[in-house]
Amino acid sequence: MKEHMSIKEKNSNRKPLEHRAKTKNGVKRLSFTGVSILMELMVILLINFRVNEYAEWIAISTRLFAALLVLFIYNQNKTASLKMPWIILIMMTPILGVTLFILIGLNGGTHKMRRRYADIDRELFPLLPDQTEVLEQLSAADRRMGNIAHYIHTRAGYPAYERTQIRYFGDAAEALEAQKEDLRRAKRFIFMEYHAIEEKQSWLSIQEILAERVAAGVEVRVFYDDIGSIGFISTDFVKRLEALGIRGKVFNPVAPGLNLFLNNRDHRKITVVDGEIGYTGGYNLADEYFNITHPYGHWKDTGVRLEGDAVNSLTITFLEMWNAVSDRDVDDLDMERYLQPQSAGNGETETAEAMPPVRRTAPEGAGDEAGDKAGDKAGDGYVIPYADSPMDDEHVGEDVYISLAEYAQSYVWYITPYLILTDEMIHALGLAAKRGVDVRVITPGIPDKKLIYSITRSYYHSLVRQGVRIYEYTPGFCHCKMCVTDDIAATCGTINLDYRSLYHHFENGCLYYDNQAVLDTRKDFEETMKLCREVTEDYRNPGSGMRLIQLILRLFAPLL
Image 1 (cartoon, rainbow, N blue to C red):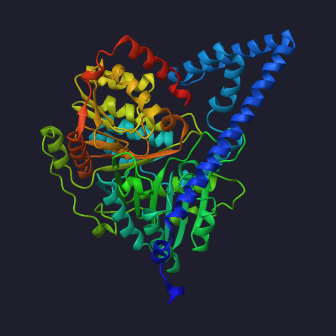
Image 2: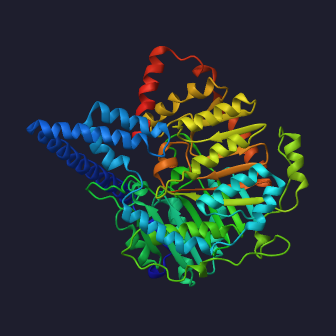
Image 3: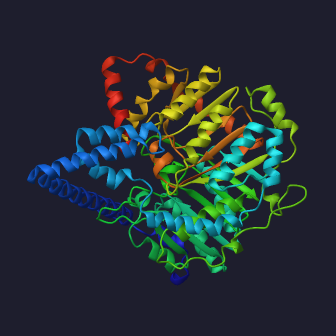
């Protein structure tokens, strides 16, 4: 009888001490790694300082190299917000600045990693369907949105889809329950990629389902980021997965040594079931995201469920990371078998019955013109899943956010846990507000990282003085990463409005247009704002002391 005990029963018998030990060991490993890297950095700096003191010509050479590096940084095709902190740091302390820039500032990892991702992408992206007809149809209906879709297709490789049903979840716990129901029905394969996994209640309930599907012959893969999960799980987590028949991989494992790729993390959140159903959004697979625990008050998070043709893009995104992360693993030889053939005809997929019927009733307070436009269109509008990578020079996440601000005519609202913006993003939001667009940004009322929270608030004044309205979510921490505009377009995914997400991390999002999910997203924004405190006036005229502190925080924000 004992041998047939379910995974859930086994997990329920584990002592809480075991979980505390895993977390403690993870924190110890991260701390040891951090101390090791810091010591290596100090040794490098000490050697450089001593060598520069040894001979005058070496010191002159160092300053000359620093000056050339400043010119190199100045001529980079990057935003000034990223370039100026490095230039100032190198000019103030050439040895420290040069060393840190070589180790941290050369974002995108090694040339070897860039080539690895480029090689995998050349195999994967041609497998996506040619959606030229859909793009032309979208452009004919709305030229400006067609231009955004064209950018995502040509610069990131992800097409627009018409035959995909999308459901928005304003509550991560509700999304998780729906996700588990879809996992239970898996017949061929399950792919899961998350920044953070915590081996507690939420994950264990998923793990039990995954083990059951493996026993039924379903292929299951789980992929997670080491830094994101380091405080939640132990180093033998993959071995425990493999013991259940689940294939597991760790992205960019933390090691006690200087690593040019260490700064680039996998921040994506993706689940794919049989290539037919996909989930993405802001939530990781840890208890705090579903308000089982409350480390920072009430946790607000969101997600979307896709069913239909567009799921192929999520599948490609997962396979990219799974195959590109290491050249020591055996790559998938036939990746096309995980992609679904495109639907044809009436715009419905074979599994469409699992989705609730589409409702096109604009929420209370929605603009009549936008609501009528959504109601007039048959079908499910357009869905464009996309991803962003630090392995290229295209900042897709930021460009989509900026494009939506430029697209807006009536309103554009954002919600983000961290607000650390480039000058380009500040200009786009400010210009939209100056055009008469209702621009609002929601940030947390309770921070998870106090320093980042202070930096977030340092950007309020720059936005407020241009007409942007700022709200703070008073019940706790809002972890959603979304934008909605004019009752016609929205995006939901993993991309924060900060430098890490926009420039350093692997991210993904989903842009959706002219469907019920957009109106549901707007309604959730309205309900969320009822729980917020508007702080716009508090930051319209900050004191000189506060502005000085904010300037210093903003100056070095890109280096964090």
